[in-house]
Each structure stands twice: as structure tokens, then as C-alpha cells.
Image (cartoon, rainbow, N blue to C red; front, side, top):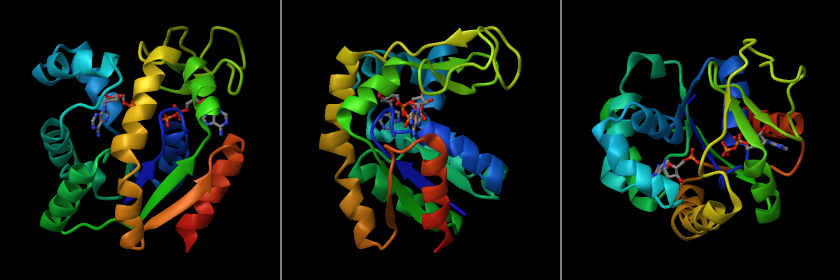
Length: 215
Ligand code: ADP
Ligand code: AMP
């Protein structure tokens, strides 16, 4: 199964992608994670994307399409993929259609996770990640079971994103509303769009996603 998770920053795409990976064996393709790795490794793409990401704006379509085109053709996508953070504009969605056609693949569903703006700010403000295994946490909504120790791998190193602050969230939300929301009608017209209430707790959101993927 090949799906897209769409939602504003902090909606819970990464959290839900992890559940889906475990349950269905599909692979999560997060363009945000790929870009952060490129920044960290000082790759040319990272150098170009760094300041754009820090401002909460979108990286140019041509760069993003090139990145996902190479990734989606890899053998580990054969069991299915979960796109998280891509496409983020209508031209990216159109380019995705073209590349899937070329590869003989298709999309099974596009799942929109809906969350109110105030809750999004609260979610990103408390978000942190294990620096070793990437497990995601939240100060309030998903705290560590044992202080300072990752539940999944036992590591004691964590990281917070520098764009996860109230100021940058303003431009990230604007980018979502202006540039990403228009892809919802694009997929609705294709009969692929399913929406779930992302305000519920994590397990309920997972159950709602499983429900819409069943039909
Ligand atoms: P996204 O990938 O859409 O940016 P994340 O999955 O990283 O969002 O979630 C953002 C933050 O909100 C994380 O700290 C996560 O633990 C928390 N979170 C995710 N889903 C929920 C939920 N349903 N209720 C409360 N907090 C959540
Ligand atoms: P995310 O981890 O999905 O919140 O993405 C972090 C940042 O990476 C965004 O604010 C953008 O600057 C950039 N980014 C990630 N995916 C895309 C994309 N598909 N198109 C443009 N920019 C992107």
C-alpha cells in the first residue's frame, strides 16, 4: 500500500507513520528528515535548504521532486511507502503522479490529519526526538517513561528542532495554508482523500487511520 499523510506541522504525521511502518511493513519517507540529514552532513542540498527551513518556508519544488524521485525508486519501497511531508505543493503532487506512472506504481490513499492551529503550536513546542533511534516524544503528551532515557533504545541523547518555536510556526502554518492545503482538493477530485480527526489521542488517531485505510 502506498499512502500520503497530509497535515500541518505537528499534526502527528511522523507519529502515525511509525505505527503504520510497524503494522504494515511500509516504509516512511519523510522529506523533512531527509533534508535535516542533508543539512547535518553539509551536502549541497542541505546547504541550499538550511536557511529556508530555519525561516519556515518551503524548499523549491525542483529540489524536492529530485530528492523523492531517487528515493521512491529504491527497492525498500516495494512493500509500500508512507509519504510524510511530500507533496507540499500542487506542482509536487503533479510531479509525484508522473513519477509513479513511470515506475508502474499507484497511490492507494491520501490521509489528512486535521488539528487546530493552537494545538499544533503546543505540539511542536514540546516535541523532542531520540538522537539515536529517532523515536518521537512530547514533554506533556508523550513523556519518557524513565527521565532521560529513550523508551525504545535506552539512549540518553535527545534533540529538539530549531524550527519548532512559536515564531517559525507562524510561517510554517502560513506555508501550509497557502501552498499545501490546495493539494487537498487535488486528491479529493481523484477520490483518494480521507480525513481523520487528529485532535484525538494518538491511539485513537491510529485507529481512525486504520479504519479509513480498510475501505
Ligand atoms: P508531524 O510529523 O506532523 O510534524 P509529529 O508526529 O512529530 O508531527 O507530532 C508532533 C508532536 O505532537 C510530537 O511531540 C508528538 O509526540 C505529539 N503528538 C502527535 N500526535 C499527537 C496526538 N494525537 N495528541 C497529542 N500529541 C501528539
Ligand atoms: P517537516 O519535517 O515536514 O516539518 O519539514 C521541515 C522543513 O523542511 C519545512 O518547513 C520545509 O522548509 C522543508 N520541507 C520538507 N518537505 C518539503 C517539501 N515537500 N517541499 C518543500 N519544503 C519541504
